[in-house]
Length: 633
Image (cartoon, rainbow, N blue to C red; front, side, top):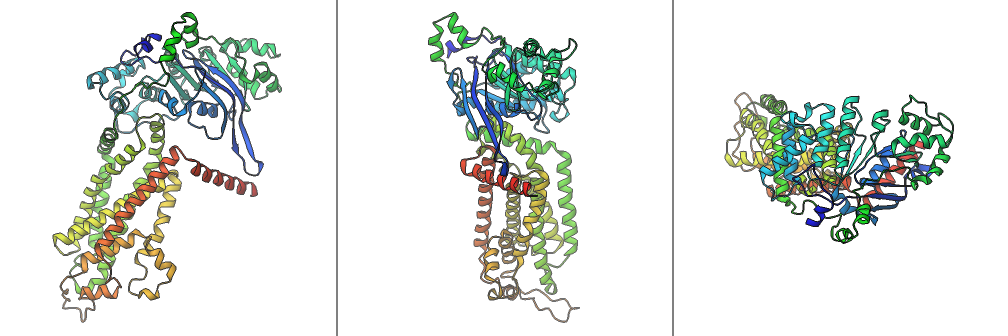
């Protein structure tokens, strides 16, 4: 490894080991998407190119030209359906190992809310850096990166209060912590003003000079920024129409009969040519550079592997000894350590959200007072037994909707952050999902205690520790299941669709929870009887009724009532057709529902991040059917 460090000096980041330079080459790269009855649409058509370390490469092109698709394929973010060859330092790319040394900074600058910039960096350092690195050295490494990216003055600023340029630099800083040799950026200047654009491109240029391979897709930059790029790769209609040094585009266009005005931005002129503003020059441009095979005046830096070997043949031995796929963080954090870091981050964010906490506590308290007032004093009233049945049902409805709605509203946004962090190998999905599961349980138990403490006391339910404990336990299990169902729904839907599907799914669950009470089982249709087993709310309802009503003394009948039919609670249970229910079977069924919903949610989340062939086939069929019906209309 010491010989590897000697290959290329790195003066920018003293706390991280130097990595061998990485050159990327792609040959005959094609990508197509299904288009219903029309078959498929080619996004990329046999494009070729070479991107070298030490260079800042820009992928340009009109909207829909295929530049983001090309970037996604090179980064390994979207590979299914792509054909062709991607070479790393002249060897076939091992995608799994390639992801260890590359980082992809997406277009949206999503940041973890409620953390300061320094705290976000500390979390990233604890997840990404060698676990044997001392906390002091981690802080020094963070300071070094922040100074390099001119973020030191914003250390104590909350991430959601950063400017657009600062958020973009923070996104880069988070991925730069473990010193990746390859950086991919999807339109890093989108939404930035001219000054912020210049600062961002200047920063990327600085990072490239440190020996990294920096590749970004970008919309038409200014003339000054265009001249900053070491390598420009322009795509149009899925083909490469220019590949080479930025300023060389003017003589290139002149050779095919297009003269760029002296005061005109070459990047704007190039895009206008691609859009056909001056006629159809697509085939001529593609053939001039052989669809990317021919690179015009690409000023390859002296620190590439090939040139170093030519200068010193002894380094061929070094190249063989130094694998480009060697991980710069060889001592990985265990799943438990990742879980701990993520759990503490989630708890900190939850605690910092004072407005959200206050609102949730207020909702539970107000609804507890309202619900308790509706059933005030009915728990020990022999004339109100049937009302207690409604009280239990309202309690499980409360613990179905209230825990579910935050998951439906928040998790679709959280998934976008998860996609970025998981793809860039911050942590394993299992550690994240376990932390997500555990992070909400303490707050749920606290808020549930507030609500149930109020409604239980005001409604005058039996003050017996066992009955109260089981009542509380069943409601908590119901809440955890409901939250799990919300996460399952929100995993693959956006906020709008999730908030629609969630309540719709709960309607049959509520109906099946109380269907058939008071009538014999023989009167329930067979299909409905089978369906009842799939409503977790029915198990909650059976558990509450068994806990609160079974084996209690007869309730007193108020003097003002002439007759109370259900003072004998065991008789009421028989009338409701629940005399054969077993409490611990209901508890076991609720626990099984938790495991089932968590397992399905985890599976769907994993498939969304890295789908297997079966899941991809289902997605393909779904897209085909959708396209088919769109065309039919």
